[in-house]
Image (cartoon, rainbow, N blue to C red; front, side, top):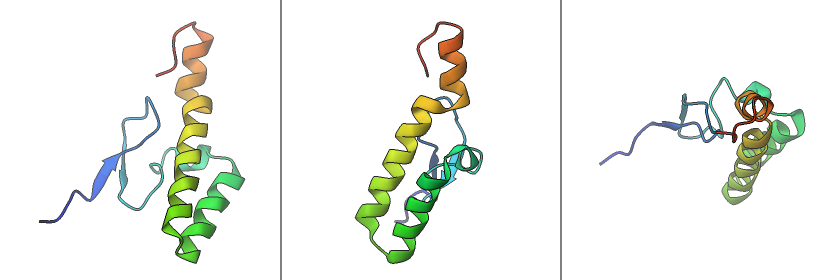
Amino acid sequence: MKGPSSFLCPVHGCGLTRRKWQAVCDRCWPLLPGDYRAAILSTRSSGAKHLEARASIAAAEWLNVHSPWAVAARRVGDDPP
């Protein structure tokens, strides 16, 4: 049995889906700083899946703190999503 081909974006408050191999969805990808994108792409091209996973987790964690949704929540005094 084949698993799902898309998953929810790991960025809190986003709600879009991403393809299985993507770290984040297409809307969140450009929000990442270049060094995070470069780390994901270089580890993916080298074939080091464990390093790609670490880079993807770090990128999602950065976006969870710095995403537009988290910034807006802090500005109005709410907890980030």
